[in-house]
Length: 251
Ligand code: PEP
Image (cartoon, rainbow, N blue to C red; front, side, top):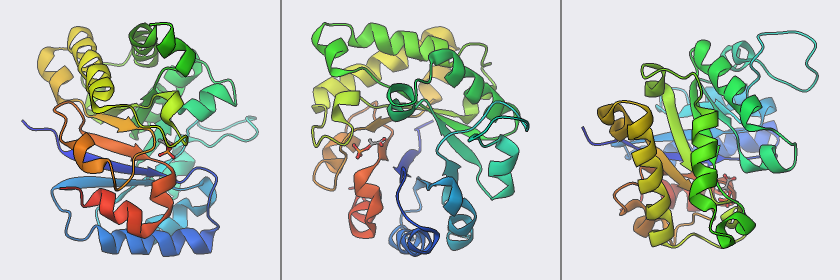
């Protein structure tokens, strides 16, 4: 079965509730005819409820930018799967490189977040990616393997139906540098074969792998033409309805 494309926007720490509502409405309008692909929006936690309301009936999935493995308790600054669901979110991102690099999240924490979210019925977008140093020292694929194995530890084949992987080379995030299509395809092909080894082949072949890192209207068509790129995770260009609309409606 062909994998359905997923175009995801990560708004990071941008937009007030009013601005987020307007942007979500504009994106829903821009994506109205794109019925053969999925769209996901990850606004800040404060705007989740408003964005869910703004995209109601459009089929757009709303996601948290992170999720705790605990249901409730003394965990200042965290948000639980139940709280995300309460605001209408049905998915969460885990392991974004900004969480790993700026906030020190480890593979084991990310795996706990992923499993906690899945257990509560959320879909999970697991981000992985190597730094520039790791790429230049020839370790990129080994790092990806370690992040996939650790991130998906104790995740069953059945649960993998609710997991999407996002390959985001850290050196390409917010820098304007995009991996070449050859670099991206090499990484995606490697992740795909690893998933086929870890799970049954048909499960490995059914998991969507997104590319992220300075995706823009100018490079979306070429990226989406690669056989193992099933969609994109977009930061900066998802903050503007016109550019994200163009990305959603890639050829
Ligand atoms: C991201 O935040 O996941 C990302 C890929 O950002 P940008 O598109 O701005 O590089």
